[in-house]
Image 1: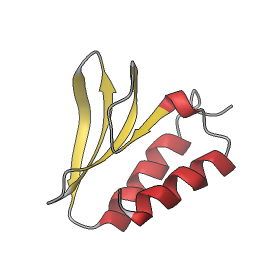
Image 2: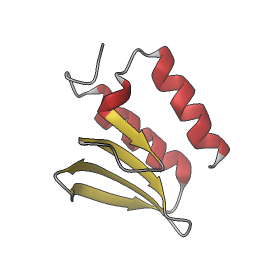
Image 3: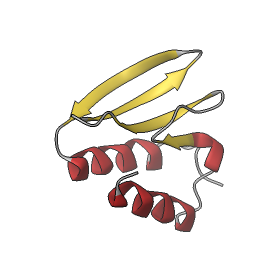
Image 4: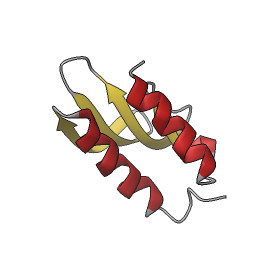
Amino acid sequence: MRQELIELKQYLIKKGIKREAYAIDTLPRIEGHCIYDAKSHIEVFYFERGVKFQQKTFSDVEDAISYFKAELLSDPFAKS
C-alpha cells in the first residue's frame, strides 16, 4: 500500500470517521466510500450492493486523496 494511503488511514482515525464508512485499497464489506490503488491510476467511488457509483479516476495520488477526503468528510453519516 502506498505511504500516502497509510497516512490517509491515520488522518481519518484522528478525524473520528467511522471505520465502516470507508475502505482504502479494498472494497467495503457492505457499502461506503472507497479509494483504490489500481496501480496505473487511483480510483475514488462510492460502493453499494456490488456497484461503483460516482467513480472518478486520478493519475495523481494527492488529487485523489483530496477528493476522497472532501467526499467522506461531507457525508454526515460517516462521522462518529
